[in-house]
Length: 318
Image (tube, rainbow, N blue to C red; front, side, top):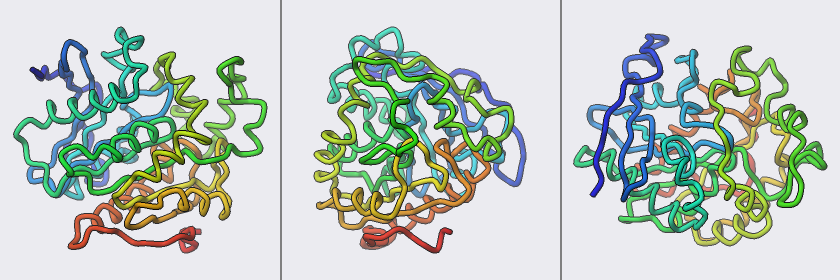
């Protein structure tokens, strides 16, 4: 049985551009003895529920930029009529003490779905769930889309990931046998620095320790797991690459290669977002990016629910 224990929000309510009317609340649910933490922002009568999954070495606060409510995806989503659940992925947050038990991908998918169910309870879900993953969080997002529990997944958004690393990342990213160059990784993730608020650069305000199992996730993702899972996704896909992405290739051919993997999806939309870096949602380009995804969710909710279909980057973004 799952229980919900509410906690006070770590983020002060602020009214900035209408995005502060609902302040995300930190909650913890017990899923078969594993505490799962999350931030939750609820719309009174949601049109859909967005499940947002953060990247590596980060917390759910990625989706509610600390100290900058005007950049918060969660707060803005509520103004568009969406409830947002942003869990700390398995092995992060309150579940960190259980990280060594969570190496099985199926276990992580089950935990994520159970966490969403426990947090929502009998609350309305609108048209269903939309899954939104960033960076390493794209792995769990894609796996959840493949399972599509309750057949209620409307579509997915992936960002900060890909099939091939950027040339700038060569020799910097780690492997199972070799640690990453920490300073080099920081430069890949947080430059150009002017794309982010000064107090956000470096990510200390959202930082969390990475569970050990994630080394295997990142090692097998681009060449094995991503292609295999993508071919099983049967919901509309929105894939975003930031203009200044330095971890993954973001050229037109690289994006077309990503789209080509989603052979069973009813539609694939590719988007190259201007003025953004790897951590797109907590940079100054975040709000415009979020609105692009909200518009895609609208398309998934509409009759037919396939979203726009294309095999080429959306050149109008630049």
